Image 1 (cartoon, rainbow, N blue to C red):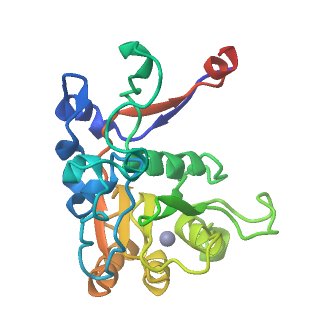
Image 2 (cartoon, rainbow, N blue to C red):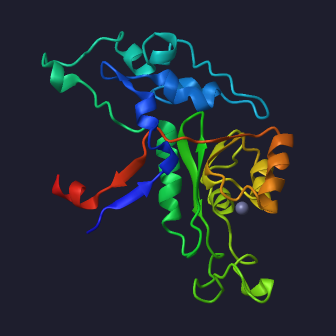
Length: 263
Ligand code: ZN
């Protein structure tokens, strides 16, 4: 079975070198640079963010006493057992050291968006989206571009160009952002962040605004010269929704089923 490779972005090929490692510890500040307001949440699986304010950069202050790398204090989980020390029984330093080369939160959520795009039947463009509540870092919606529910993937056209608009895919396809929003597994998306592999078009931008989301993170802006994508910029800006291009900290994330089966 061939490997499935999720190429996050070729432009990020040198990102790992930029991040660097110091004595086996990741330099967190470099990772967080594109998303300054959210710095404390990115590399600490035990830190929960303060609620972001829509239309203004979220305050990055984690709850008092949490955020081991932001405040210098113990994480909530460590605090429960009394401090930052090790509470196991082994004295073997190698056996208690945590794994270092895990992917960060932004790469993780963008990987989920990218993997979702693998489901698309569109022969020309596959887009994926993943909505996250940054306060809990839980995924609350996933989508990819495709025809509406119940419409056969073989009954409508996938063409980009045709004699008439009705013979193209455009009247029929639901975009990834739309599907992610409509697939939400929570009551509302206020304050949420959407990761999308392509900068949203004007129709999706309107849905993002009306859903009261707070932030858009995109991987590619390859369609920026087209009108629908030009129109989405003022929509998001006027609504106070921050958008920024994600630069992956690793050039690729690989899913190797054969490797996992062999473990
Ligand atoms: Zn769209």
